[in-house]
Image 1 (cartoon, rainbow, N blue to C red):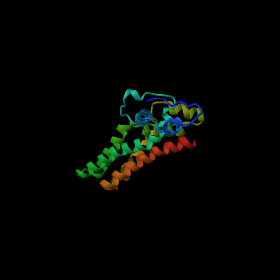
Image 2: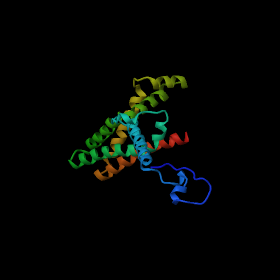
Image 3: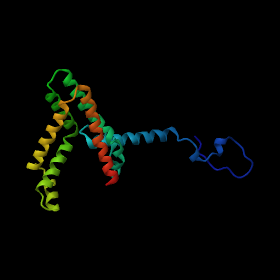
Image 4: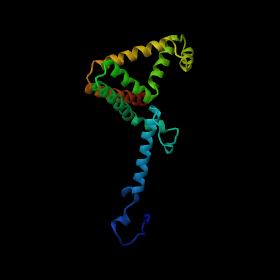
Length: 195
């Protein structure tokens, strides 16, 4: 396609398209496709960051991608919740005991995320509980070993999550898992925006 060039001053000739500046024209299909591919790349980058699900190599990495991909965090959380909720509803429908169905759903979410959030919770509680100074707390948080505070926090949160799910039916549990996983990742976006 011919590129737009300004016409010399004089009588108007040709179509209106000839005279329209380029910013008034719709984007060519190639540009829209490029923008769509970039947005898909950001969605896949968010998926890669928040889960253990592999993504294509073309997604790549750039210093600003993590911040730009943040808008996809709630959607990724919703996907994790869908998988976890489907397991809970399916296990409940098969007649598994409520606690077993809840444990299976929680295990699936931890497998998909690599227990990223559980690891962060344990590190945080170990640091806050065992560090008398800021420097010592940060040192404890960087330590890969788990301490008493972290272990207690993990046990407590897993019991609370399983207990909450056992009180719900298959449909309610499914909806609660999707909503809670999406809301949890949306909270990350809020923290990044206002921190």
